[in-house]
Image 1 (cartoon, rainbow, N blue to C red):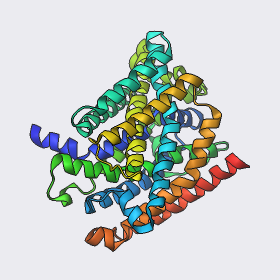
Image 2: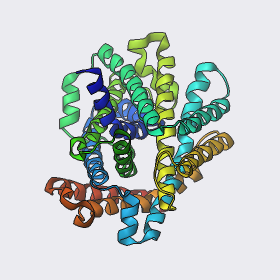
Image 3: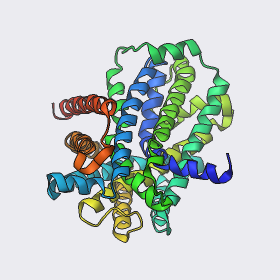
Image 4: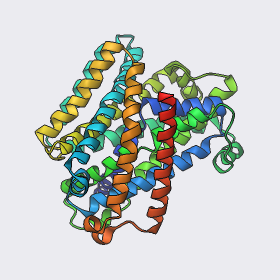
Length: 404
């Protein structure tokens, strides 16, 4: 493959990699490590289900983005009224701003522990770097390159460990193909599904695809179909590698994952005394990619919902993205960790917003008025409907856990 073609291919899969990077944040890394440490290889099948439905909704959103130059929220506003679009946009902003705290804390812990300095300085510094990145002339290209680099960094560290640890492949196969629900695993299964099957991330793919079309000036949108799928498969691969490493190393040692130091032990076979440092660099990659990606979702969709448009190079859009970063950083500095009340609030908003987002995306993708001949086919219709049922069930379980 020539350098030009390789560069074109990397750019084409950029939206999927951006979504993968922002979904695989510090909390996802923690949940995945915890599952492997507690239940070994038995819950690998959950990755297949979560990635399948994430891929389905990412493909649906990509199809919507390719079919029209109108943004998804603009279509929603046209069909159901601008107030519905505003509710969705503001709701996503609140969720992103709330969970931005965890991303900031992850970055602060990673570099703070590496350098034995206060987390606060690094929270301020790297959120500042994120805001500076916004004002590069071609923000999307910068974002794309950053995400590809950080995802590659995480994959490399854990893949080297996977080779060194020599896991039991029979147990891995059983974990993937023979579903089991060990006692006490329901909570972690729900947490993994909720974090990996991200409707908000899929929704945002439609915006990334449209931005990529503008940047690359692709006249023939058909050439770009399904390229976001590669990024989602990378997300699944990364999740599987982390879970397998934790299962092979942490479970036999009886380690309960509760700190970054606990998780870093999973890299010991490959990196020895440097395992902690390598893991913290990986934690930084997960946190910083999520800081930038998560803020981009919340800011872009709020800007679009308020009628300012969704152009990545618009000053108003950039101000909204910066607002998400600043909000998360301030809360992280004040509380030092994500406070329980904030998490409950974010989950409360998610309960009502995510099913609405999923349903709106699904209905637009089935609407000939907006999609024309690009309406989704039978497979995506059936799989998308089943995915919506799962999202609604998860929302119901969260509702019961929070309010009852």
